[in-house]
Length: 112
Image: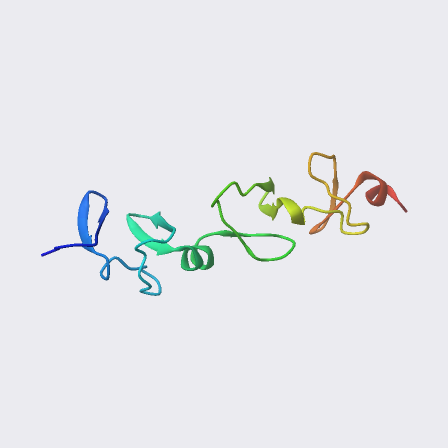
């Protein structure tokens, strides 16, 4: 019986101490979580298990808040990581060239 402090998830009541991350068993009551296949995950577990990894920094790209990212072919980058591999200028909204796994601004990518 839930007498106080319960949580509702998918129209079902839960004790707040029973509503935990499927991965690490951390209580999720009162914190952000992400649902996948009807199961709740804390942000860290979801990021490690399912989130795409940034091609530059290798950290997970999560969709929390207003996070924006760049996607090209099979790769993704955090907006702040999408930079020329040579001169480090931001390539957001710019044309770019690719060579193997690197991305370059037109000037660096065209240099001999």
